[in-house]
Image (cartoon, rainbow, N blue to C red):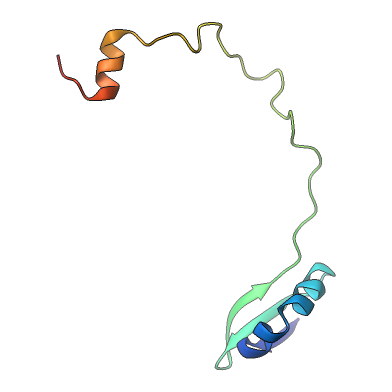
Amino acid sequence: MITVPLGEAKNNLSKLVDEAAAGKIITIAKHGRAMAQLVPVGKSNGQRIGAMKGKLVIPDDFDAPLPNDLLDAFEGNHA
């Protein structure tokens, strides 16, 4: 783990991000006190596109107009 003062982190952010991406954990300190960390982003768990395929059912009337009483409730109209 590397600790870097805030001013140095500002001046070397690109380098520090590259180091974090390479697996290092970088702590940014302000007045000698740890304030934040740069950490590597975890690896993706694989494809997420289509993860729910076949698990959701959209009814044929999904986009049909709402009944008047329900529409009135959404619009704040009271009977």
